[in-house]
Length: 416
Image (cartoon, rainbow, N blue to C red; front, side, top):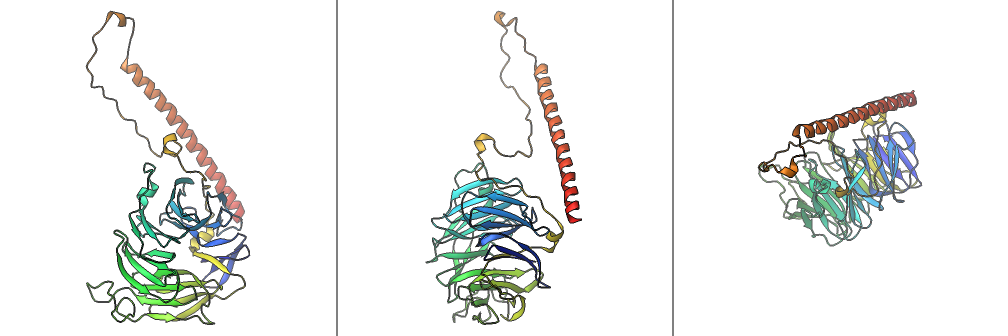
């Protein structure tokens, strides 16, 4: 399924196979890359231009949750496991939330200008941010998610673009990064070192990127509605990412350029996504409202998913069909970051270390004759405290189970 955010405070959930509208939603204006699906809550997170994040379920029209964010979010991405969401703001700030608890783990200045796109690698180890300041930065997710790391330093910084970087995407089978910019080029970057491996001239400002599941093909969408298809490597073993000497692109085959047309895209391309079920197909969407399937290797239009409609298409994201039958539960997003020094964060496990005394026994004095010290009494006190904590923990578990049963009853009644 596909979730579409349109102009005029309208959202739609569409079944791509039957081309039917499953559900309509009411939501405000959403930035191009500020719509994302969360596997943890099985909901779509829509960051509106009024600093408000809506959690929308495929099974109900009403929002599951409404949270206010510290700044206007322009782009976001969620890890494959669904635990973390990394977002970029119009002021160049990078935010990272724990979606399971709603805690804002980090809030720091990452760029000088608005962050246009956020991408996460397939193994959830790296995060890339692309900005209007013509810079693309790669961060380590473990550093971003760490409460102990106060100062966050990017793993690498790429400054090869001369204009705004509008989009970025990691390759599926490696930590290489593709970027698209207003300077009419795509750059292939080693995310570990920041070294540029290739530069691909597209001929128009690049607004969206997608890579095939096997990393063999690249699709770029442009500001004027062009679609650029090219291979990323040759079929010869040992010659990945071979650049052509005749300017025909990267790889062993000729690049294909699909111009704007009446039956295709004739406005800025806002969304590109390859289909793991059909590795040769790519789903494309433009501001004019057209959502089309293309063959990545031939550049041929396969079929129309959604025809052009009234109202500008702002953003879209894919939603699995399983989300239609489940009403997820989500935690509200915190507006203020966690302060580790105050202990204002969740501790999932705690171990009690045994005490060891290495000092020698003190000599008895006459003044200490009336005093008494019993290690056994101290151990009994510790055990008593542990019993109290365990009892409180068991009580909380019981309350949580009761709450879960009540939520299940409410969900069953809603479905009925």
